[in-house]
Length: 225
Image (cartoon, rainbow, N blue to C red; front, side, top):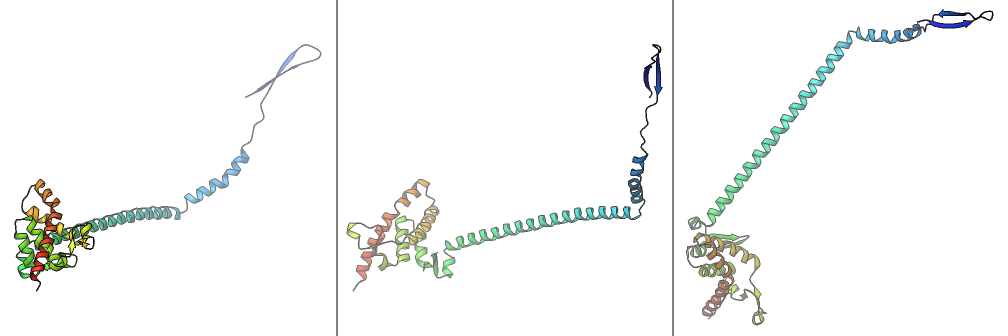
């Protein structure tokens, strides 16, 4: 590229055009500065240890990925084993409950076992439970079972609920009532009653209990000398 300069002389109005080349900018200094960096890069590339280090890093990364996969598989295996074990325990527990339920209401079981387990630490003679469950009348079931659970003399001194004329007497134990109602429901279902009939007899439970208490009073008085 050229730079054009116009000049005019004093003697004459003649103009001259002078062509000049622009000053060149030397980049030799920049080249000299870059040479050490390029030399270092070339030196690193030519170092025989570099490929080995890169290969080692690649192998380490692959090993880490492999270990992570193995750890994930191991955790999944443990979780699957724990789930299977939990399911087996649930099945065993259900089978045990079903067996206990079957034994509880199986009359032949109590031919060999002298006592019937009502619940908690309450046991009654198996002969009493068989008489109750073999019967057909709900009121008779309540009478037999309540006399066996509380005891004939003890229940004769209790009431289903307190009134003015029975304020000095204690009410029937709530926990024993709960256990009795559980067996009573089972008895009603075994009779193949409809839901409406079952609800009717459940509502009449307190009335049957009051009859059982009155019956126990008569029996106790009759047995007294």
